[in-house]
Amino acid sequence: MIQKWKTQFALANLDFISRKELINIKVTVRLFATLRQGRFKEQVFDYEEGTTVADVIEQLNIPHKELGIVFLNGKHTELQKILHDVDILSIFPPVGGG
Image (cartoon, rainbow, N blue to C red; front, side, top):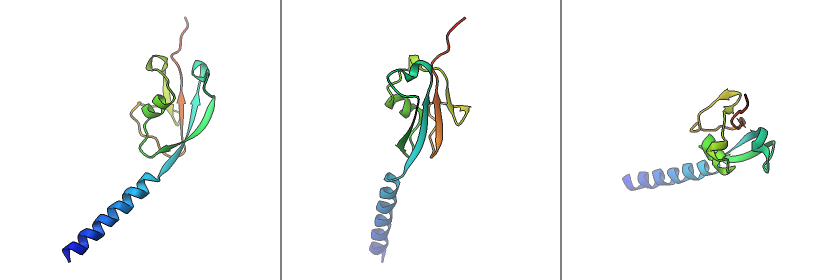
């Protein structure tokens, strides 16, 4: 009886893990000013569930010195924030002037 339960539990875990791996989210990424050079203005990407703002910035090869302010759904956000389906990520370079 215990062996049957262990087998069922193991199979249920495998099923959960494989379903989790298939979960993708769609995130709209908007770049502004100099960050658009050689990239894009706005694009929708598919990411794995659990992707953070920092993961996206790294994937886009945006150096931290070129990073100004980052908004998630219109609000300031931290780089470790986890993204969700249909989020809008807006990335701005530092503002200069005087």
